[in-house]
Image 1 (cartoon, helix red, strand yellow):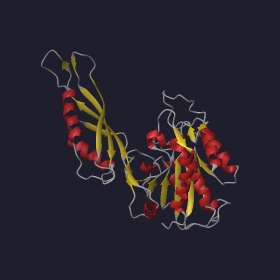
Image 2 (cartoon, rainbow, N blue to C red):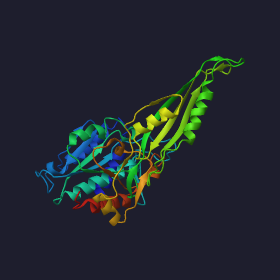
Image 3 (cartoon, rainbow, N blue to C red):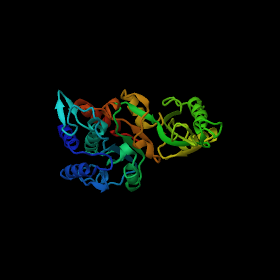
Image 4 (cartoon, rainbow, N blue to C red):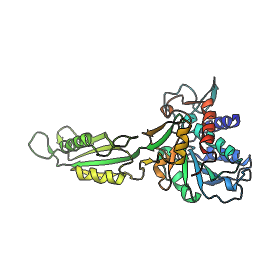
Length: 355
């Protein structure tokens, strides 16, 4: 396992901000090819297929079902609060510090270690390992661009820091740009139509609105007004007031359904920046979930989005080493024993699994 911790240290030392993952993808590709792996690449996304891997027990055997193992290469930019160099990996008393160590390097190398171990014996499925780009910005040149190239996939593991608990549901994300229209006039006279007052009525609707169906893992749909802008100067009645609504769906309504409901409920203009980041969930009866529960893994609903949001053609389970609360924080870290335990649990979860 030490070679995978060493690999993570090598990757941390290379800045890999979203849409700038080229150098870190180069380094990972070089590492894979140096170990005889037949790696494919599109942009800054890399993948391996077990039935195309000469070191695999399933080499040359077309699989009847396929499992995807996915984690992302990109990171956010380091916050100003760092007291350590974010690009100098350092292991102190079993704790590895560095940008991307927890999100998502730990999952990346643990999944790669599990892939290498699982393919040593014949499995009842083919296995794909994919290191993808642009996850932190939900970019279209990440996993979304690769899925059509991978062929049939029946089930996916999305590696993200979850303390190795199973995220069986994940909230979706939609951002709404809302504009209330009024009519300008002089503030000293009784003229004009104040767009701020009109927006206040719609904002109050958003604040009190409740969608009827509540998810057992994710709870209700959550809508929050997060930005507002209006006016040009103190003595002019504003003729427009713009505000932004952050929407977190719960899997019981699609983003399109939520958008249509909001548009019908408000008096202002409502435009969605995108409706593609939908909520996701997996059946509690899925073989991987049932196996996980038998291993003592806890199912939960995740409030944060991941690559699950852009995968709709097969069920996925989000699980990985590390803790989500450390993601995007100063002096990010992961413990090396978390990486080792994560790889071990991945193997136990997937070895001989029938899907």
